[in-house]
Structures are given as structure tokens and as C-alpha cells.
Image (cartoon, rainbow, N blue to C red; front, side, top):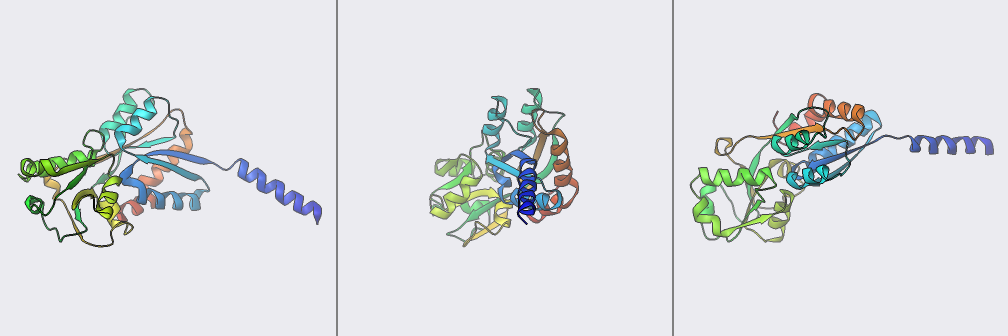
Length: 243
């Protein structure tokens, strides 16, 4: 019996020691969707997926400055392209999803972008347009709707799209342009209303991904296939992404 226990323990240690782990640098809008994809991927393959989330501009800067990851999933194609142009990827970026922008208010029943001209929306939150594509899309949508000049003095910026959740929940802002994937998750909205911003008002948020040379290229390719062509793609659709 003692020998069997020792053998079982040795096998357990061996399995743990050789368990694969995939690391992903991921845009903040992916948090809830990618968590579910990672869980499914582990169940199907046995590989752990660990993700670090943030604004795409800051993430690519970290990668260029030496941060080690297997995959970079940006919020648009341009930031993934920067990693490619720096010679850090195995190939050009691939579009793995199209993100959608929503306008959300916890306090009021918001129905259109024009509603933002009402002074009751004291603060309007957007992600930093310089580093977060969803923030850039928010500015485009407001300009296309003819409200930007009127509301610009009331705009507050957050570091990433995830900050919008915090700004709304804590009352920092009365309205925020957010990622549909966060609202579709059911994990951040407990009151108020939101709607899809008309896609004609902003350039498509084509989210690009790259496999990084410094990582486990073979396992990374398996994950990218899973994300875009398999069960992962179905999960992404559930969270409001289009492809």
C-alpha cells in the first residue's frame, strides 16, 4: 500500500511538472469571454491558459520591451501589427473577432447618443482613445452623431475599456461607452440600460491576434484555431463578438 501511495504521489508530481501553460496578453474587452474560452480549452486539452489584461497600446509596448507571452490578442489590428513589425511574431496578425460598442447608463434610461447632450449626464466615460480602440470608436461615434463638441468638456477617460465598468458602477460617470462583451456577460450590469451603438457610426473594431516567436508556438497555434474555428468561436459569439 505504501509503495502504491508513493507511486501515485510521484505520478501526480510528474503530471503537474509537465502540465502545459499558455500565456496570453489580452485586450481588456476580452476578460469575461476569454475566461470562459480558457476554461473550455483546459477541459478539452489539459492546457492551462493564463491571461494578462489591459489597454492594447500598453500591452504591445510591454511586449516590445521584452515581456514574454505566447499570444497577443489586441483590440484592433494596428496594435497587433506593431508587434509584427517589431519582428516578434510568427506571422501577420489575424482577425479573431469584431468587437461591438455599446452606450451604458446605470442611472438613466439611455436610448440614443443624442441623449448625452442632456446636462444630467454630468460625466461621460470613454477609454483612452490613444491606447484603447474602443475609446477611439466612442469618439468617432460621438462625432458622427454630431454631439462631440457639445459633450467634450464632460468626457472623462479611463485607462482601458474595463475602467468603464468601474466608472459606471461607482457613479464616477452617468454614461459610458463600453464593450458589448462585458455587458453581455451579465457580470457588470445590475441596473440601468444600454444599447448597441450603430456600427455605421464608427470604424469596425477588427480585433487582431498574433503568435509570439518567444513562446510555445505549437500550442499557441492550437489555441488560436480553437478560438476562431472551434468551441471558442461559439463562446465568443455568446459574448457579443462578431466574426
